[in-house]
Image 1 (tube, helix red, strand yellow):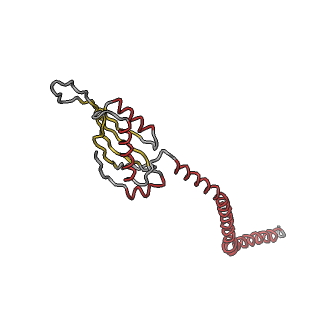
Image 2 (cartoon, rainbow, N blue to C red; image 1 turned 90 degrees about the vertical axis):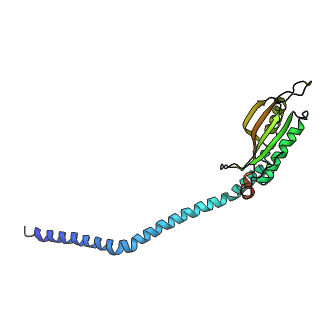
Image 3 (cartoon, rainbow, N blue to C red; image 1 turned 30 degrees about the vertical axis):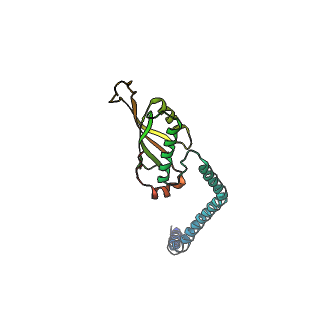
Length: 213
């Protein structure tokens, strides 16, 4: 029993020494020397991965630029957009298009005419700049159907919305003359779109003027 006690004491001393050395390592070596190096290593690995991603993106840049050039070329040749560069010019283009289609049907005098055409500035945010004119016409159904088909089926692509048709009867019939036919009082919004690349300039220059005919 007496011999076992010194061995027991030496083993306990060794264990305490190891614990002391471990604590000293943690306090004076690991947190002051090793831990900063490990954090630096993690940063270097992250920077290396980021560099690899940037290099991969840089290698794809020519392909991306070529694709963007294709998109711009397609957009420039797309007949669906209005040809004008600003809201005001596009409004004039819409009015000219409407008047041209009305003249093209060669309707007899008084059978189809544009009473009013007013530019309208929509407030909704859209992907492309929308150009609208509010139109009021007096027209027979046959003639108006031809005009509507020409507007929506031509180029650039135009749209008709808010269509309202009210039948009107003449209020005065000259004596000894056959009663004239009634007419249709037609109101609608005619609109088209500016190209996406022109949104900034259009927003800066668009206005809400009026043009009556």
